[in-house]
Length: 145
Image (cartoon, rainbow, N blue to C red; front, top):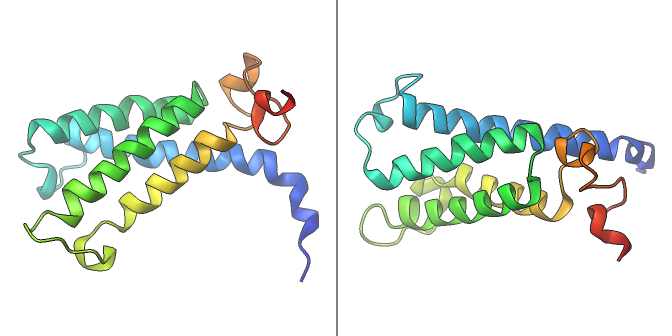
């Protein structure tokens, strides 16, 4: 089945994908730093999780706005990879590789979603696009070089 008619929506859907990814990361930052909503596993968190929450709050907001999208997404991708390996894979001492068993499915998904956004950019509905740092071309403003 050929769905080429959907390709005309790709730029707008990229912006929507960027916004939703940022919103989901932002909510983790709010939960970690401001304890809202109250979640038992964020009740007494170590300093490293505060740092992760700060990144998720600030850079998640930047993703929602489409501000410095490529840099924000790249940093968040690295943070999510770090979160998977340190917070999920080795949380029991011995490595548990399967994400279904170690609870790291969301971290992996966020890692690759942000990695994609760091390559694709923020799309046409973003502050980056308003500032001229992105274009409608695949690959952003740098695609024409």
